[in-house]
Image (tube, rainbow, N blue to C red; front, side, top):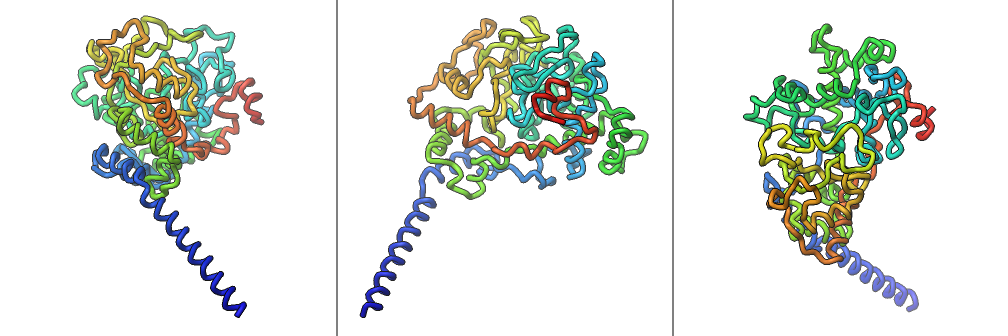
Length: 449
């Protein structure tokens, strides 16, 4: 009798457990926010499917975006490009001997800062120190340093950009089709005549601009020649070891740097619990009431469109280097096209891992995601050169409650943050140098030995 009673109790407990389990599971499956988000993305996507917003895995080389037909991505090229990107040994063209082999591409694209400089302005040649502590070597004059007048854009998800830089200057395709008459007016754009994709185009010019070189020392003493042979056996030996092939390897690596482990990515791949309820509400605001997706609508939530928002320029910031009020780069797209209507309009940037940034907009005029959102809510120019009637028609005042602002910011800061970008950083480079910087102060700060 007692055994029968115990069995009945056990059966009741099991029934209650099964009911609760399936009830919770059903709640997760039927959460209306999940289908609303995916439906909104279906409507926004060029393919009419939210799959458009799912990044390929980094080792799925065939699916990596916007590959140049003359430079198909391979795992070997990705590895070489990763090493070259972080290799301070490439800094053979520094203006002063004291800076030889002290900087790299990654000096201005630090993984922990969302692949941005970690300070308001990137400094390569002529810099001393790491991240926000990086400053000018005392022996350098300001006009000697490699500091650009615009905040460096992240390399994260850059493969989705058909044209690069804030002005969209690099790349012969996309928005630059039909602008051939402009290529060469500014010397930087002449490289577009090579007919390569934007990343390869920018890399060729960028290596030269940032005084990075492929020398016999790099190839033989540091051992990169063997890797070039492995990656480019189809290229004649006499043409194999140079800035162009280095740019091909860098292009392969850059297409591989994707925020594929961000919560939104996991959500779109089928894990409905990857986003919190608050982040889901923020996502719907992003896709609806807050109008963010009017401009931020590519797979990386960027776009190759140009909009004037009236933010401050770099020279407005305290201690900005090597720039000023007459810096032509302040004109944005107008710097490239020469058209008045394009003045002060800048490319729409991607939005993953922006919580890791230290500065925002082309002139580093904001220092937090909340400041950016509040600026866009108010929708007023803060630049005396940009009148309100010149602002983008998409830039209009928003009416959001305090709770909605918090939800939107939570989605932008946490729903779009890949926590594991360190996977794109090599453990070491072939030279054995420290990186991203190899100057004495950086070596001390980073504990590199």
